[in-house]
Image (cartoon, rainbow, N blue to C red; front, top):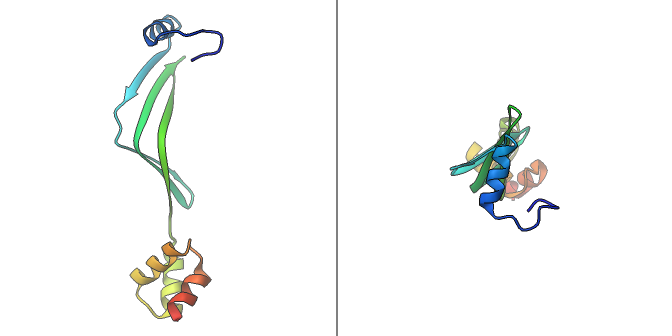
Length: 110
């Protein structure tokens, strides 16, 4: 609901937006991924709306987020070498210990 508009039903809102030159479209999406340096924000089963106004598109995404940290290959190799384990084991140890290299190595050496 837009402040000052009272309780306007969705059809009235859509009509008003069209009069203002605003186009709104629901986007059927299964998953949305936002990549940042070092991590990904993944939104599964999102509600995505594209709003076009004055030649610009704005996307609104709603849903539950999951954050994935990108493991550096250098960190994996370092842990594998220091703990004398395979890269797969080193990767798993880093994932389970929030990418804490020292903690992963210490736990693997036990």
